[in-house]
Structures are given as structure tokens and as C-alpha cells.
Image 1 (tube, rainbow, N blue to C red):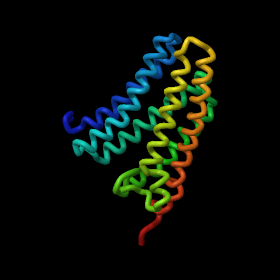
Image 2 (spheres, rainbow, N blue to C red):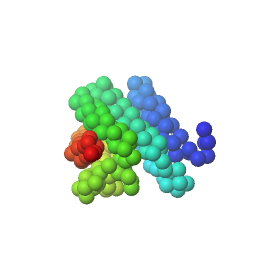
Image 3 (cartoon, rainbow, N blue to C red):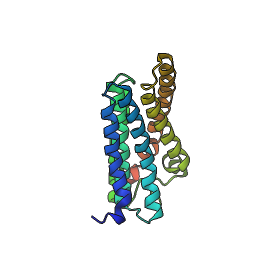
Image 4 (cartoon, one colour):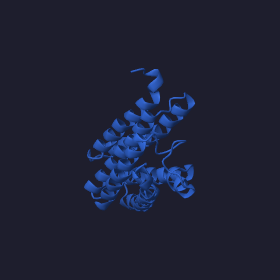
Length: 204
């Protein structure tokens, strides 16, 4: 593989493993493990922005890159929701909603990809103005990303402080962002589902 011309894709894949290490450390049951997990989680989400920057800056954008980016998002996001449910920090329906949404939208997008369309960009499968705004606009994508990052960082961060009251406050704020994030998760899937009909229309 040409590493120089696939830097963005390498970053996309690498951040999955960074997230896995961060999640594994959450079971370390020590302030050091939690702190390192927090730092690695922040790095993993920074890498999510870095891969896109590299792709645009060095003209490495491609359909493969788009697929890897979405794949990385799904794996990282679902993994965090699952571990928070397993540890009792969030209800189990959080990962259930996340995984259901991911399978639904990605199944539809796989059909779109086979027809030369992508999730975002010039070849986006979204054709309506409202669909493009909800699903692909920078405002919605950034808002969703911020809510996820805030939720994950705060939930992990609530394990770090030595004082119980401080942990409770941080945890409470983290849960609020978790609900905001999961709402964004569902809402941004609506245009994908509603506009999917055209993908299955038979051409004469």
C-alpha cells in the first residue's frame, strides 16, 4: 500500500485501535487507567477530524476513504455506547438505538454506493434541501460530533476526580449530552430512510 497517498485512510483505521485501548482501560479500575483512557478518547476524536483534513489538504478524498470514515465512526461510537451500558453508566437502550440506526442507514447507503452515490459530498444520496441539511450539513454533523465527544469525555471524566460530589456533577452533565447525542443520532437517520425509495425504483 502506498502509505504517502493513504495517510488519511491510515489515520481513520488507527483511531479505531486508539479507541479500543481507551475502552479497555475503562476496566482497569484505577485513576491512572481512567485518566489515560480519557486522554486516548480525546485523541481518538481528534483523529476523526485529522483524517478529513488530510484527505482534503492532500487530495486523498475517495469513495474508499468515505467508507472507512463512516466505518470508523460506527465502530468507535457503538463501542463506547456499549461499554457505558455494560458498566451501568447508561441504559442498555443507548447502544441498541445506536446499532439499529447504524445497520439501517449503512444498509441503505451500501445500495446508494453501488449506484455511484455517497453519504456526503457532491455525490450525496440526499437530494432534498432539508435532507442535506439534517444529514450532511456542517452544522448538524458538527453538532452531533460535539454532543458525542462531550458525552463520552464527560462520562469517562466522571471516573477521574477523587471527590464523589464532583464525579456526580460531571456524570450528570455527561448524561445530558448523551441524550442530546442519541437524539441527533436518530434525527440524522430520518432523511436517509425517507429518501431511500428512489434507490429501489425499477427503471424502464
